[in-house]
Image (tube, rainbow, N blue to C red):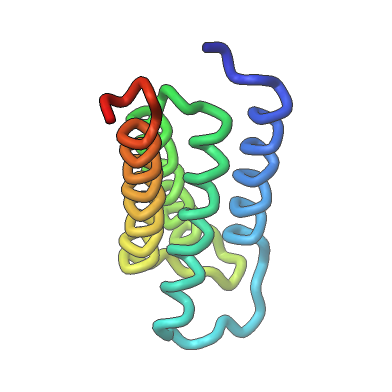
Length: 121
């Protein structure tokens, strides 16, 4: 199955927005809080779900790409002098969001498989 151009465009746009929000200059970053980590996890959960919609049969590649992108953004933040700081805990929160998206996707697919007439029940 070939992904539709509209789905790919939606995923690319979502990735670009997250990258811009992550790398845009920042004055006076807030202190590290649990909420900050939840925002990271939520953003990457959203990217994962949009990515699953765009590339439904490429979950491993999607997860690897999002993981590398999230780590890459943290590295860029640590190298750029725009008021941003790279944080390994942010990369871990990004990864948690990706994992949550994949778990939800697999659970939904399993539920559909079991409930469908062709699924064996």
